[in-house]
Length: 186
Image (tube, rainbow, N blue to C red):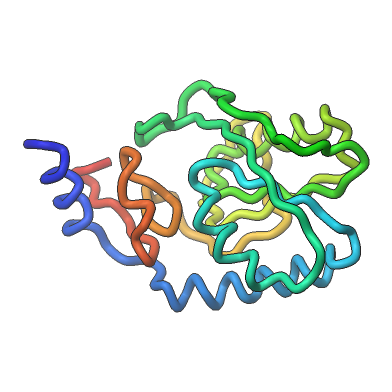
């Protein structure tokens, strides 16, 4: 089976767990929570690449206060359906010293990537670091991982999902909803 056929099959056999409307409502609520807590801090929103692109891009227009954005590229999946060793690919191009930082990622899964990113920000002498995720997977975190995000839009049981920034083998991030992969494709 060629790759495009496999990706099409994964999509066709998936189940929508959150529609675009569900996501929009959840992001509205998360933006209100972030605004109430951080609107006077001039924060840096640090996008965890690649998955954080879509959630951050949809969150930003909902935030009506001064902020800066930047990115960090760290990955543990590398196209697999299970996480592995963390790979650091790019550091922020902005000074985090003395600043409030909001790390934005697509999903809180094992908690290890988010924890490593928060630790990195503190190592760069950020004043305070918050975490914001589109999706919190309800499952035990790995030892040493972050247990809870400071801000989360949606919560889901432990299922492999894609869409709205989340990928399946580096594809399907652009789906306008969040979809659970069928068991045969996990």
